Structure formats: structure tokens, C-alpha cells
Image 1 (tube, rainbow, N blue to C red):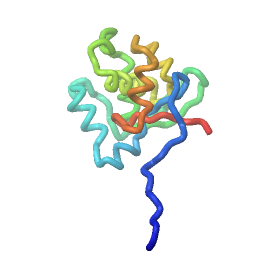
Image 2: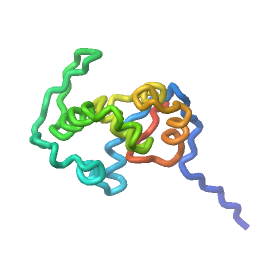
Image 3: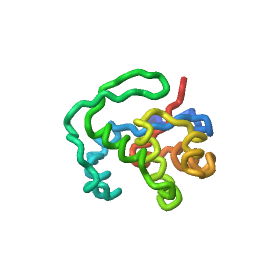
Length: 146
């Protein structure tokens, strides 16, 4: 009689904390056969505000490091649009939608739960519980420094 080994699904030994940094994993959208542009245009209802050539490359300057990097027009438009959201946006949006928008407004540069909470006016522990678990929402993933 054989004794097969049990199979475990994606076990992680890491646990998110308030210092854990999060980002939007664009590959998640592809893996789930979802289109990020379509989601943003329909779910967040911003299509009419777009006047950018989404295929054109743009030089984006990191304000903290002064480093320039090339991004496509879509990424530039996202950062531009989301950095001009109304002040009450975070209060009226779900935690996931608000965090998603905050990360995109920050050029998808990783932000800690504490930094996200400061922008949203929400408790960092709620951000960790929501975004740091095994379920991935809108491609938002934690980064665990090993």
C-alpha cells in the first residue's frame, strides 16, 4: 500500500505587517485573463477623462530619486489621473479600490501599509488584513523582503 505525500497549495511562511510594502502586480491581470485598461475604464468610470496616446512612451521622473524611466502612455495616464482624485475619494471608495488607486497614483512604486493608511485615513491593520492575506484583490500583492 502506498502512502502518497500530501500536496499543499501555495504555503507562505511570510506574514504581512504594517511595514510590508504592497504594489499592483500587472502580471496577475494577465494570469487571470483580465484586462487592466478595461477594468479601469469601466469600473472606475474614467474613460471620458482620457486624452493620452496610450501606446506612446513617456519619460517619468521619480520625484524622490530624480531617476527617469520610460513608461507607456497608459501607466503615465494612470498616475496622472489618480494623483488628482478628489479629497473625499478614499472615504467613498472601498478599501481595495482606494488602495489600488493610491498605488497607481504613486506610479505603482511599492508602499507600506502605513504609507497607504496615511493617504487613505484608514487603520494600517485593516490594510494588512485585507491586502496581506492569501487572496489577491485587483493584483495588489505584498512584497516580502527575504
